[in-house]
Image (spheres, rainbow, N blue to C red):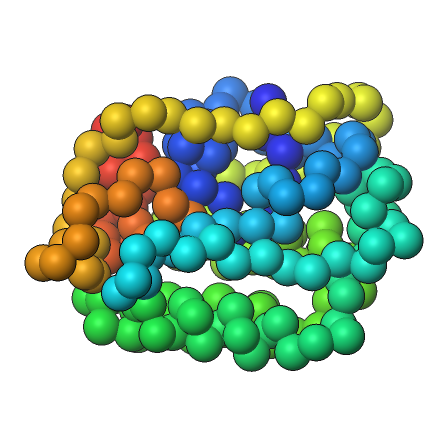
Length: 186
């Protein structure tokens, strides 16, 4: 089952690429501290979890009604963290500016931000797939996790151990056009 994650980890994208269905399920309640509003990247200090803040009053409702909280400058912080982590990666120049545009744009709802990120990422991965929201079926949110993913070169692998199942941008910035092949090989 595919829910619409914020950037999404490698396991999530593997399931999207391999899925027989072209639907993403959005008719479920929002889960705090989940991949719906968080993703992980690799920094010079190790793994870092980044979050999109949401308005507290909307967190207990349906996912498609959750509003983004702009009371602090989270967009600049998130983008700076990504830029600091991946600016030296081989493919940051080819894909980074596309993500920057989406992250720095002001979206009202979390689902709108996640959908825009999804569209940019699926294009960068070079997978043509017509994806639609399934608004009819009520589903339960669940996360996807694959253990023991194959290693690939990471920016800080000269001093840090390989970190598995980070946000898909880790693979994209490090493998570039080979991202799709990597996801299919899992």
